[in-house]
Length: 344
Image 1 (cartoon, rainbow, N blue to C red):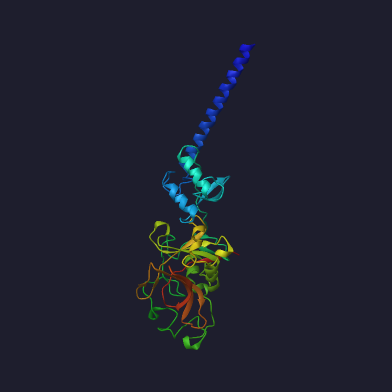
Image 2 (cartoon, rainbow, N blue to C red):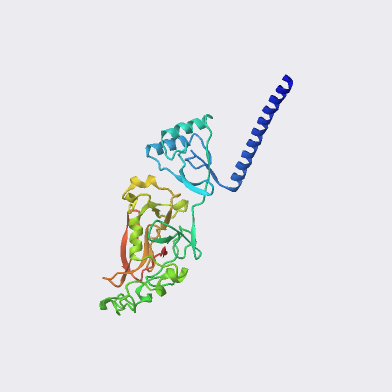
């Protein structure tokens, strides 16, 4: 009887060991599959070099002190759901503080296990073959300029109301006048500027976005661009995602207090945003007259709205590292265009 009981005890222990072996093998198989199929990142890899090492400690300390910028990444949370996590949030409590530094040190000493995140792509949405994002505004904004193949490409340059891109711009070759700024043939409210048409907004036939991308798309109105300017957080960069192209990253505002803030005026807010957050990039493509002007230093974007006081001009957006504001410019000048479409 005692022999039988001992045999059962031994068998029970063997089965438990066997179950643990199977569990470990299964976990390794899942891990290998995930690593083969997905890009991963360790919590605590604040340097972004693919490892958790001693070099991450001072960076994390600087982040806790508010000296270094905290980075967020989009990760899979399970069940197909994605969310954002700070790379410095080592203990996964939603914050970056001294407890994360302590845990990171324990990981490096072998006293704790590092956590691995599976990175998720930023959600992208497409209309008529062109990607856009929802910035929480009344319209959706395209991720690229007209004629651009990537967000950091400048794209094409258009005179206001023309639907074909040009390289050289002047009153003499502007299609909506007879050779100078006082001979407008369309979009004119005062006889001083030409033939009165009483049209204040570009019609679809003269809207480059509608003509190039389809009738769902259009150029932003003055109101649309004002909403973008006042409803988002703007951060200047000299090299968007390492492209070497300068411009503004325009983030979906996380808080009402962030709306309309610009990094050159409100640098203290810069730590709250990272490229894993919903955003568009507006490159500083300059503008064109006879030649390019301030390309790489300033951005000039058209709206579809006529300047109702000075009819030889139309409204647009101007920005540089030191400023971001609306402005009015001569209609013949070549500017970039960022398309939008209405949500309803």
